[in-house]
Amino acid sequence: MNYSSSKKNVIFLLVILVLLLGATAFFFFSIKIDAVNDILKNNNSIVSILWILKDEDETMASEILVMYPPTKKSALFDIPANTGGIYHTLERVDRLDQVYKEKGYKAFKKEVEGITGRELPFVIEVTLDDFASLTDILGGLKIFVSDPVFTKDESGQYFMFPSGGVTLDGDKIRSYLRYRAEGENENFVKDRRQNTLISFFSALMDNSSTILKGDDFSLYSHYFKGHINDRNLDDEELLKVLSLLLKMDSDRITTNSITGTTNIVDGKQLLFPEDNGNRIKKVLNLTVTTLLSEEMSAQSRVYVLKILNGTERAGLASRTSKMFRDAGYETLPEGNAEKNYEYTTIVSHIGNYKSAETIGSFIRCSNIVEDEIDATGLQAGSATADFTIILGEDFNGTYATSGYTGTNKAGE
Image (cartoon, rainbow, N blue to C red; front, side):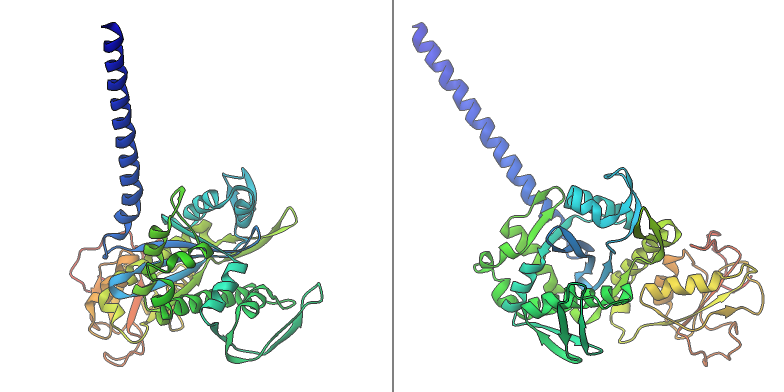
């Protein structure tokens, strides 16, 4: 009797254990699936991906791709490897790429999020060798080389590329991304790598019926290493993330990069972001705002802005003008308004109030008028700018602080 009772108890406990294990596995699987689906299920949300192209354990390029599927608009932000700062994961001042080299992608992602102020749920790593292999699979990448290249590096290796539009195979792409001419400006290196990545996105979309096809994707998935937060993406999840590229217009990707001042620290050349890193956060915020605007996405041209200083503070217009240029706008030479303004004002010369609101949202300016003042010395209707921004006394260098809710009469 006791033996039978004990046997029943053991069986009962085993059943409970199996149920618990099954429930735990189901819960884990649900969380795993929902983590990706929760981000991607809403087609009306901004998606951010950190792309890392690495050569062995060195970050050759790290780019934030920000996409908004409904407008097919996207932007690519370069995060220079030599970006300097006090990195908590290293507990010292150093180059950003040193974080990746010593601590891996998780710590690197965390530091990039701190620099940009943007959450990056997805990380995709591609080695240079895999990138070259993918290039061959895609039939080569179309690259525009502005000037012919015939140079050699310190090891004596030659690099040769003809000028004009060329299609480079995997080996040539590997060389194209590695070469650096003596004394070459860092911006040229950055542009070369950004443009190569854009060409890669375009080629991937052109070949999506093969590479991004569900049944065949397992043949190519090993070329990418995808992550969401702190775990690896499986093939199904990675395919969902890469398929987002099909929802963007690769011909209209805006590009940008962190800018700042270069200093030598402990023998290393470090780039310290402008305005303690606040500048890139502003530009990212403005770019996201423009991505969200369907009306602006329908425009076939970039808006032209005129920035005027309506205060006594020197340099205010030039700094603001550069901020808007970094976000993809064209700007005319800045100047001074003919009088001082209490409130920052946006003047629309093209009768487009909605776009003026989009511009104003970035600098928190709601004082918008439609060609009612002659702030630039031009008669109404003859302005060469689409919008004029007059910085008032309420502008603190970042945004208008007054919270203006007046009658939209500039300067009052």
